[in-house]
Length: 596
Ligand code: FES
Ligand code: MG
Image 1 (cartoon, rainbow, N blue to C red):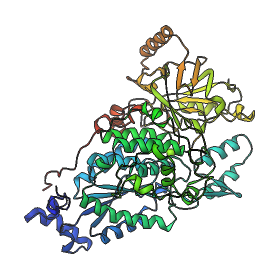
Image 2 (cartoon, rainbow, N blue to C red):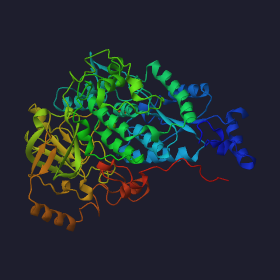
Image 3 (cartoon, rainbow, N blue to C red):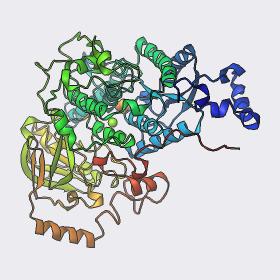
Image 4 (cartoon, rainbow, N blue to C red):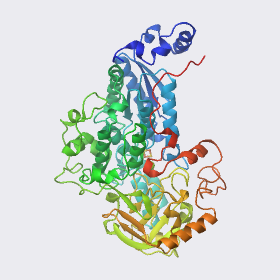
């Protein structure tokens, strides 16, 4: 269509209609006080709002939406805000990841079913960002993301503390007897002292940066704190820009190219960002039909050092990152490692956006010549007899001493079994023990929870040992750390080799060699697989976790109904982004049939 052809806009199928249908579509809208002039063919811009008081990280998004609306009106569009599903990391059980695809599906269907020409997506907490991008990418109407911004730095007893990272650290200190429950209560209020999402380089900040690196969020937008007025100016500018995107017909499919994904993957490595970005980027690539394999992540990041000294791997927080110049500086420092011709939602290229970026604090953001950590310290992808379809490990968050390691497995079928045993003074562990936790993958838990950074056994903590090798088919919080092998695929519940490990087996981890192997001969493994099958424990028949209500501690049956049933029947493995098999690809923005 010609870019500014009003009649060809989706919304005109509703609001320009004559007779009965037009009457229906316009009349009810006028109960909100809109005059007839708003139906003159101007771009209708949806504002998808994942605000919820159950998602504290997104609880301020109504204010952000107001700023977006100002921008849409200003540029001559009609803004219409609508609620989306919201996913809050801290409250939802068994895990928000069970619902990421549901939210993506809900966003996709809402966009297509309504008279929207474009959309501004308001996200924040971890899964809300990929879910919205996935839904919008499948519909492929002009879309722009505004993330809600990080909280201000946590401040506790004279020092900075980071969201999530402080939770893991302080609770370990309490287990080691260094802090009391009262100390922890005090820290709660000190850590989360303003609106916004986690201010470590956890999953929320990582995904906000991914949205920017991909070109789906305005340049510089990821790092502005939620409490900073400039976030609202950015939201207003994004509202204006959404109208232009419709006029120029600039759709996600033009932004989300293979090169844009390569940029995002490299930027994630340079940030020491969350392992969860791997899963979300794979899922998003599947939506836009960009070929992308888990195994490519390593090659793409082989030359990328970690430039940002950010918690959980380093020292600083998002507020510092913003004042240092934010993501444009990181992308500029990456030089030729970033594709510069890629178009972004501003209508300008990445190269144009980052050309003027200046660093104001070299302690926070380093250079290629003087990085925070050398190349290869980001997320490593491992393969081997224990993970034929891959596993990941965040090198920057691991103990360098453990990156090449051989040890005996101590195996737990359910994460609850390990948690119950972790403080047992008799737990048969030493510093070389490899803790294996299984049935915590997409299908097995179900929902692929962030339990992969299980606590270090108390007996070891008391000896001053702060890290051990942990292996699971689960994920880990982006704010977590430790030598944790995650996302083992295939997961135990679908019969992956992880299901065959027994306590006492030798496991070999070789991160520089990108290997993870189970040192048990094949005949023995085949015999174990037969035994498991006979016991009905291959997961295809009854995965231990696919039981009762989803993810309940003592379930006893299949995920029988509703979303959890649909999810467990169709979820793909971690190496495919854990999307549902029938949600890959695009659905398009065709106008559906009449409702009356
Ligand atoms: Fe919401 Fe961390 S809990 S972003
Ligand atoms: Mg999380």
